[in-house]
Image 1 (cartoon, each protein chain N blue to C red):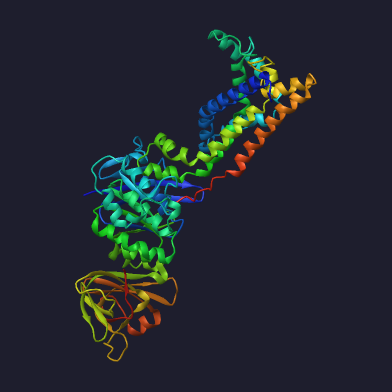
Image 2 (spheres, each protein chain N blue to C red):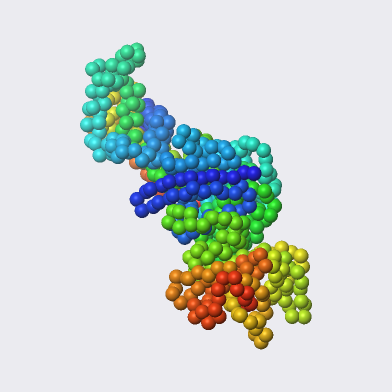
Length: 356
Length: 226
């Protein structure tokens, strides 16, 4: 199995980067943090676009950088998608796609046709980049990076320069990459939504340091990290549509440890779906509430409690079966309910966001 | 005949000189422009200033130093003598060499600006698409800087055509060898041949206007980068 080991130290005026981490060689790893947290610089260091003297980088055991060795960017078997599509304006879409492809060596993992088909750009091949919309440009840029048959795909906030509508246009294509290609992806983002939707693995960064790293669901459910996410704190569950209740227009989503009812969005039974449950949409009760508008009542056990930044709030992690959920409570409620670790509680889920 | 044979000879010589100088400067000026556009060296300032010197220096000063350098006791003169080429002053190739220096900024600066306008990003992209630095230069930087090259070539050509002071210092006034159009006009005026001076001056005026018209009317739309 391929993995990336990266150790970099930068001490520029006003900017520090100090990381030493191992990234898994499969699935989508999100490098997540606010702007200035060093996530883009880390990605550029991994690509060799930024050269840092104090660094060591290995890819699947191959040394790309250490005290003696430096493999230049053009000899690293990677694909890179920049925040702005950065297509070559003097070439057509097809010319852009062929640019890297005809220079690439090694086995073909992604054919030109496959890249074109995956990103749905077959009708654009003869156009010049200035005749494309922002979303189309970014799709071409992703296809161009794939067409070099990379062993790892690096993406630097590929959606950040696009408006919401264009984002919605591209996200399904990114999910297809994830599902259909066996190429590990390092995905830089500052958007909790994108991370929750796409990532399998999370590396959270702040001020040039890694503050948390691990599998997405476990890492998001860590209490020290979500507190920093504020309103975006929440848990992610991988569920399957188990049943559709046509009389009430509801769908049941089964996840390891329980199930949730949500409004039926027409997703067929049996389809896998990722859902996000925000901590602010979860409340806790000692007794089962019979007369309530909340549909989803789950039995769980309190796993951990942590103070939030605001002195009046606490964050509670509850395990429902094996799945962790987060609940944000006032300390007064927590105290009135007498919530302690290990206690059985009823979990009320007001709202579920489907990631699709 | 509208122009005399000696006028036509002067024009032909001028065109030949300007073409050769433009071609040489495309080869010599491009690496200098690339280096100036990309370097972070402390030498960027001094080298850039030296390249720009002919813009402000009186042509007679430049011509004077070049004459000394090419003379029998100058470094260039020594070199040409050792190589068996003989002295360069008052020859066509001496004029070419002097013009290369004189027109250098007109080639380097537009090309340098064009390279700088491209920025780092297209070259970073090229590197992630497996293009080695040389490859990226020819397949990305050159095509993107093409409008800058056209501007530079036109300016260099036109500026060499308009040269006068340096020609007099280095080349003198030898028909068919160093007597270019601007010197020919000067000769006509000196000889009080105003009618002939008028005709040749009109040709030069039309040429200069057409060159500038070409530069200003033909502005390639800066294509939006993807």
